[in-house]
Amino acid sequence: MKKIFSVLVVLTLGIAIVTPGCAKSPGNSPQKVSIGTFNIGWLGDGIDDKISRTEEDFKRIAGVISESNVDVMGLQEIKNKTAITNVLKYLPDYSYYIGHHGKSQNVCVIFRNDVKVTDEGEFMPIAVDTSRNRPSLVLKCKKGNFDWKMMIVHFKSSSRYDSTPEMQSEARRMRTAQAEVASMWVDSLLTDPKEQDIFIVGDCNDFPQRTKNPTLMALIANKNIEFLTHETKSCRNEKWFGIDHIICSKSAKKRVITGSDHSVNFYAQYPKETADKISDHCPVIIDFEVVTPDND
Image 1 (cartoon, rainbow, N blue to C red):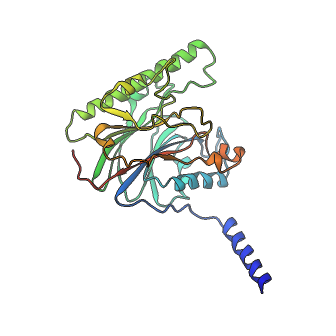
Image 2: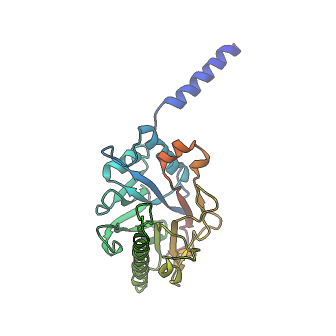
Image 3: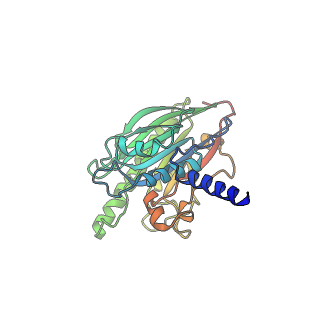
């Protein structure tokens, strides 16, 4: 009898492992909203992709998002609608909006279906050089008593393709200009007393602590906003500061749930070759309470 029972257990576990299914996240309390950002890294549509991925890779990406238990998440490096649906078909509780002018690296937002999100379109001034930069995506969001305006960004990188000092300097110049535009966008919204809860989330390709050739000075110096991810470290190397950020206005910061900031370090869960197919970034998430009556 023990032998038969053991066989049944093994068979049951085996079926659980190989049977495909959707990544069902538990969902958040109606008393809070989780806001995050995740650069998925060249998420493609299966046609001439920079990074080739299998269905198992898409499932793992969906599993990371499910583990994050996020309500609203900005995404970066999404090729097109087909690319994001490759992941969201395993996340039936989520919908999305995506930009169209970022070439093969568009910004995108995914959101749980019980959160109200309105697409307000791409904000083109963030693409200070339209041939080399991506515009941002602007959303109006609401959960419970909390409504906010949010911009998803992916600032210019300083990559290995910037192979000369001149190219590196130009990349920093563009990123500096993008931070200035984003800062002015926040200030322009805050002139309206009916909109005081503002977020900028995304891949800033820099961190506030940089002292040599800093590029985010306009955002750091803006007294109306704060980097909630100021101390966040990279999941790939704990000695590096993170470049994926959640920035918010002073009004929105009052709703932060202390100690809720977290990341999903899938590099600690999978072999490197598997983790690399998920992304070279990890998602960053912070929770906010939505019970207090809205103040704008």
